[in-house]
Amino acid sequence: MTGGSRGVGAGVVARLAADGAQVAFTYASSKERAEAVVDAAVEAGGTALAIRADSLHEQDVVSAVAQTIDRFGGVDILVNNAAVGSFGTITDLAMADIDAMLTINVRSAVVAIRESLAHMGSGGRIINVGSINADRTPFPGQSVYALTKGAIASLTRGLARELAPRAITINNLQPGPTDTDANPADGPLAAGMLGVMASDRFGTAAEVAAFVSYLAGPEAAFITGASLDIDGGFAA
Ligand SMILES: NC(=O)c1ccc[n+]([C@@H]2O[C@H](COP(=O)([O-])OP(=O)(O)OC[C@H]3O[C@@H](n4cnc5c(N)ncnc54)[C@H](OP(=O)(O)O)[C@@H]3O)[C@@H](O)[C@H]2O)c1
Image 1 (cartoon, rainbow, N blue to C red):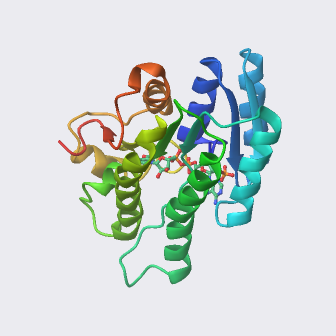
Image 2: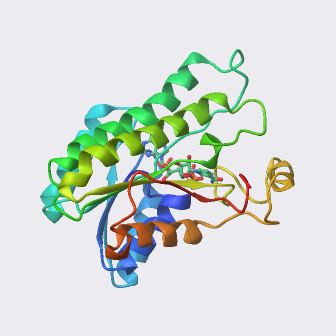
C-alpha cells in the first residue's frame, strides 16, 4: 500500500493487518509515524513493514514493490492511497504543485499497478483511493486535484477490462470529507464541507478502511471497475 503512515492509509494498515494480511506500506517523510503504525499492527498480532518511498520518484515505487516481494513473496492486494492536494485557482497554483499532484496521485499509481501486476495472481485486488471530488467539486480551487481523482476513476474502469481475465478486480473508493491531517474535522474548511453534505459529520479512517477490507475480501469478487462513494452524502 502506498501512503500508510498517517490518516486513511494508517487506518487501512491497521485493518488489513488485523484481517490477517501481511502489510507493506510506503511513506514519504513521516518515519516515526510509520514506525508507530508498524508497532501498533505488531502489538495487535499482525505483520507490517514500513518502506520509505517517495511517490514523486518512479524508482522509489519500483523499489518499494521489489522490497515487498523480497519480504512477502508476492502481492495479493495493492492499495493506492498516497496522494497530495494543493488548492488554488488554475492560475494561482504553481506548476510545481500541479506536477506533484499529477505525479503522486496518478503517475505513481500507474507505476505501482504495473510493478505489482507482475507478482499478482488470480484473486488479486487493486483498490485505488480516489475522491468524491472526481464527481463533485463544489468549491473553486479544486480543479487539478479533482482532475487527478477523475483520472483514477477512468484508469479503474479501463483496467477492469484488462484484469478480469486474470480474475483480478480493481475498484476506486471515493471518500468524502474524512478526518485526517489533510482534512481535519475541526479545520477552517470543515464548516463549508459539512454545508454541502447530507451527513452532519466527517468520516473516519476506520470507516474507509472497513470498505477497503470488504473490497479486498472474497465476497467482493464480482465488484470491478467501480467507483464507490463513502462520502456522507457529499455527492447526494
Ligand atoms: N481526508 C479526506 O477528506 C479525503 C477525502 C477524499 C479523498 N481522500 C484521499 O484519501 C487518501 C488519503 O488521504 P489522507 O487524508 O489520509 O491524507 P494524509 O493525512 O495527508 O496522509 C497521506 C499519506 O500519504 C503519504 N504520502 C503523501 N505524499 C507521499 C509521497 N510523495 N510518497 C509517498 N507517500 C506519500 C503520507 O506519507 P507521509 O506521512 O510520509 O507524508 C501519508 O501516509 C488520499 O488519496 C486522498 O486523496 C481523502
